[in-house]
Length: 270
Image (cartoon, rainbow, N blue to C red; front, side):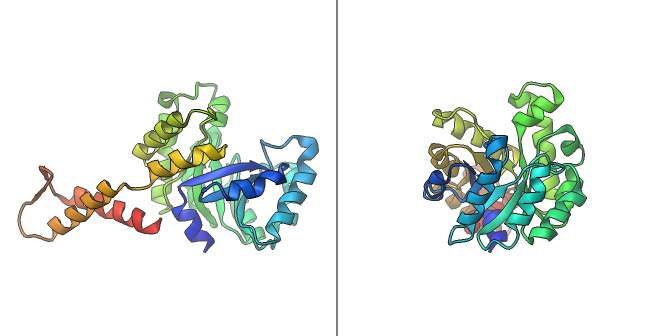
């Protein structure tokens, strides 16, 4: 079930691990996945208690992903021990993913799918290996951290090559399309929708979010519209006819049919 949840998820909403009062609110936001964050959203002195709050929540009826601290940190050792065997753990989100063997180790220890966040030059350089690592079920791209690592801006032009590399690696490993990074503007829902539209055009099929109000515009963007589904159904129907056919004035050839089937499969999986 966790694999299906991960593959079809369009939105993944972070909630700080040291804010247990927000856990149920995040779950009720309409997001496909809740990600309890033990890394960036939690100050160092509060990480131990955040781990306990998250573990206690996942020991009950809740279901969520957990973003651990990065491989190589002392915090990760304790997190792996505490999270093991929790019934509500959907997946572990590993930041600063750079080593395929480490991702496999985390997967085997927790017996949980891994979402590998690509956030560094090394991560991008090894993204094909990371995507193919045993236990990795999906990739995410952290463009803000990546831009800091390479000393660039975080705009679309600067991030295009890396974003495309993450999408390509996902396809080569036969994973679902990756999650794009967060939109930091909390109150600008139009910006969230625009960022999601851009990501969808590149081949991403989901987005990481940091506030409940970002969920609805992102979900709408990554959900095929009724018009798109109708077009895809007409294309598939037309492709079964003999000879050259057109739909909406455009020739229906093999790539168009493949696109229509992909859209229908994405709609079916939601």
